[in-house]
Length: 303
Image (cartoon, rainbow, N blue to C red; front, side):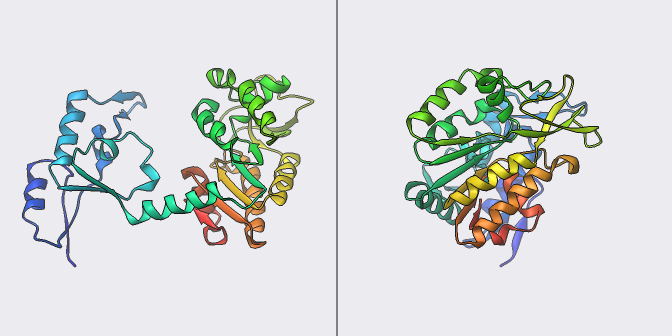
């Protein structure tokens, strides 16, 4: 079928094109994110955050609403975001698309009736961003690896490891004891990194070093990846599990010098899948890792 392309995603010309399209016709709108009103904010040429005007956001959402009679969301990867196209289309009939249904069905099966032992691997920067996720998973999993930037908050709070300039989430740190208490109560085994690849600055060309829990990270330096001993701990946890859910990388994989931990952990995950274990990759960054290393088809599911 022929597909009509529009130069914008809202406005009189777009509405005219849509309204003149006959039954069964297809119209592909221009990228929504070219409008600041889609995400609610953007950055100017100097990198400063600029917020969208509330009235303009409202108008943009009305423009999207004017284009249809039924709203179908098939964008699973952005369904959790409060973007205009996700939450601002005001139509009486709403439905999920086939991809959203497929993803929800898969995760329902994997999370509600997992083959045990069930392991979750959580990376990322801020504890506060994943408190609810950690809290929910502690009711479901048998073991949990906490890695990436947010692991430094746990290491400092629980073991008083010197993390120097590594990420520390002040707000999230207040919740760490509560989360650990729940893990203990539910008999969930927690694995944290024990050694680190360090940098003197957050830069691909930074000077690098190594550190462990005993030595601590030198003042003025930061941890940007996990070391070989940590990977061995992760491998052991992965080997013991039958279902593995992974969200968030253990290092700054975008920088070659700090990608080793992520690559090694992904290799462990691929080996687990090849042994018949269920390995689910969920989340943009981790899915990107799988794509970068060309292993998407070697895992059970990449979301």
